[in-house]
Length: 407
Image 1 (cartoon, rainbow, N blue to C red):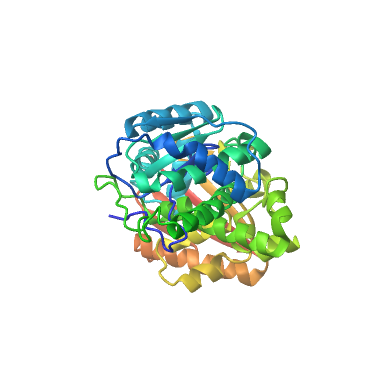
Image 2: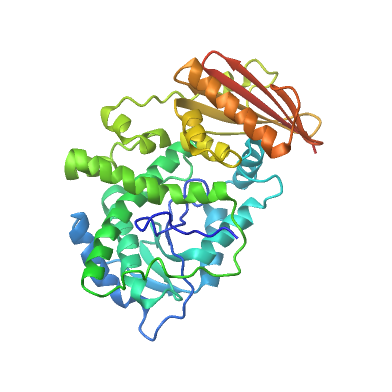
């Protein structure tokens, strides 16, 4: 089954609640499943807070309580959090959109799959509502301190920048939410990297302790595309924050929480963010619906450059093609419309820097659909299954994709 193996030694923390799923909770996912020792996993928390404060350069404004919880406790908490933070239809609509555009398989149970993946991998989390740090009791002792440093960096972020505001799950633009998550996780990962390096130098952690830790064996497979989205804030966020600090110093790093990037395009291309040249041209619902006999959809979302690249990567194995076909994104919106016959239409409008960028995306997306559904229909009009069909149209630098879903 797919596992959350880090692609580099730097990116060893894995799953958290991106804006896709769990809002402003900060999770540190680890590949761990080991019995805890006699000493409480919270025993290193206060020392870790001091270390995070020293490395990050933010004096702590107060103690952060530490609690130890079982994985069963964590699962209950995550389910309660979803019920509290999310409108009842939001995850159902996300699932419908992700299936429609090809991000996840048509038969994948999105909500349960995501929660089980988190529960199986999580090492600890910081809760910005209750202002405390929770560590999972099964985390191996050598890793307790570095996990605490990561999560308590989130506590410092919260003390100075209000994480509930910064990672607001009610933000309508999911791509912008993911960019904010990348700032928070990249910042915490950079602090953790220095703490981990210090621990290795001091012999507190074996050189390969992180990489050699094991995941739980009984967790359900997570689609590759969702793995990419969940890893993004850690891996690309780390690279982004490091690039910003290298060019602009500590002040530029602090400004990320005051004037955050608005899209994953800016995270993927830090130079555009620092120069202020990245476009942000999200279509309105009216532009997406384009004269249809309906004034408003029941749900809308923005996929962004990262989301589009992830969709294309589900079937296209050439990373260069995927990168070129998603580069040049300047805005998109997906709108769900309910039909009178009980079906749905998912209408997706993407805007591109140039006509050639739009053409590259459309060509790659057609190829994806043909491979995924083994469709040989007309290039711009395909029947994908008995209940799913798609039409595509290019108008200058704009691409319209309409997916019809029938019960």
